[in-house]
Amino acid sequence: MGIDRELRELTLALAEFVARPSLRFGVGERVADEFPGSKIGGSPLLPFCSEWPCDGAGRPLALLAQVDCSDLAPLSGFPRSGLLQFFVRGDGAEFGLDETGAYDAQDGFRVLYWAEGAEPLVPVAAPAGTEGRLPFKPRGCFRLRFAECASMQPATADDWRFDQLFTETWDRLMPDAPLRSFCRGPYDLPVLWRAFDFADDLMVLDILEVCPPRGSREQVGGWPTFEQVDPRAWPDAEGLKRYDTVLFQLGSSVDDRAVPHISWGDCGTGVFLINGDDLRHLDFSRVMYYWDCG
Image (cartoon, rainbow, N blue to C red):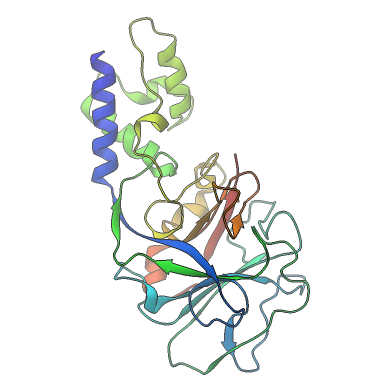
């Protein structure tokens, strides 16, 4: 019916309007643990005699990924040189995720950046036991290969801002039937769709089905992927809304035969988010880390 066509067009147009540059990458062949470039697993390059990153209890973290920023095609705000490193706790099923909701505490995870030429870096072997449980197997080190150039990624309904943008656009175009009148909360779109389903003369498609497909989840920049709900949308998560930029995102392997096989729980996705201004100033002291699964 007409309303379906109009909603689909509105949703797709909005997704394209707020598209963001995204740089995709793939997980490649196995390499030596000391491989100095972009990789998941293995041994990081650290300043000589530096302390190994630990959690709040003093337990050593495991290297999840290392990104050589010289591998990155031009991407607004991102450094073009130096090393970005992502450490998580590797001794439990939560991979360092904070169960209290303090997703930016950098307790069970750490993000480090080493500017090129600032100080000599050497490969440092991980302390025993740190890779006991990382979201990929077999254990080891695997190279990351980035796309030659960034591509524009349309917004998906995963991001909490899409609900807000969609609602504001709807209300501006249809002031006599504001979207908020169908919602329990300010941007509770799932309730909107259930409300429309009860109407005999309307058959509105779920916004998740209308939005462009997510595509690859392995990326820096672009829009994040959440399997269930964006935690920044929770009522008590106002402080998390400042994290607006995908710093690094790694999804699960769809093919069980993939080597390595990546699995964040049940086919989930792990994402590190940063504030865009902090990124431009190379300030990695405040980063949000989150993963969930289906």
